[in-house]
Amino acid sequence: MIYTTDAIVLNNRKYSDSSLICNLYSKDYGKLSIIAKGVRKVKNLNGAILQPLNHINLVYYFKAKRNIQTYKEASIIKKYDDISKNYNKILISSVILDMINYSSIEDNPCDIIFRLTNKTLDKINSSESTNIFYYFIFFNIQLLIYLGYKPLIKKCYKCSKTLDNASFNDKSGQLECTNCCSSNIKLNIKSIQLINKFFNTHIDKINTHFNLDNETLNNIKKYFFHYILHHITNMKKSKAYINFNKKYDSTI
Image (cartoon, rainbow, N blue to C red; front, side, top):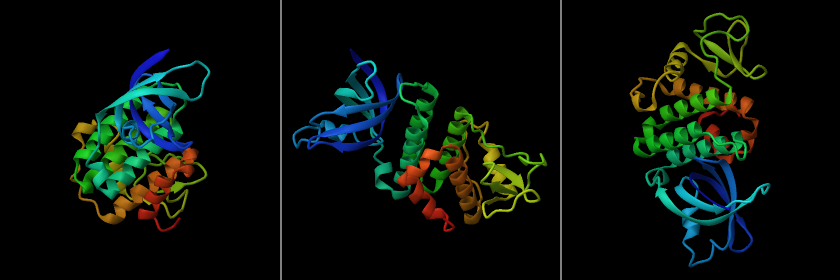
């Protein structure tokens, strides 16, 4: 049976001398694994199509109960050329792809996740490098909400006190007030207010002109790093995520 769907290439790896095995997130069928035979041959252009970040129209042979489906052909719908020219954009986009890869179940389609990923990559691709982290916050929050791991930002997880300054508790995986928890992963009131703004904001209306100092931004990055590792444990396998953290957090 032949299936056709739009998909975003998450990653690929070499298989034999001439083939690739690719993980993709598709609009209609969720996460897919496919084998593309012969695409690494010099004269075969399909290898370039099946590169991470490419948004493609995929045609493949489907066989029930098979974990890896067979590639037939594909065409590129969209390439994120500006992302590929900027290290910070590459790093954050790679983390996004790994979050989808490590949190998704095979053959479990979700149009919301597909549209969220596509729209976020669009924004990162077209935005100034200094603004891309705000779209990354938005993506984190929306994906975590969908997965059932909505960050609890307003009140202390332990005593329910309204949070102004907070610490992240690695054991509970939540924020607690400074009376209940003391850790080196802290959020001040400015950080908490910023994160709260993203819960009910459409991605097209995100204001990227926030007046935040580097320490506040880095604390937010550190918080999300630990929060995601706690709730999406397979992200420990993500080299992009570890590199992202090293860029902002010298404590790990």
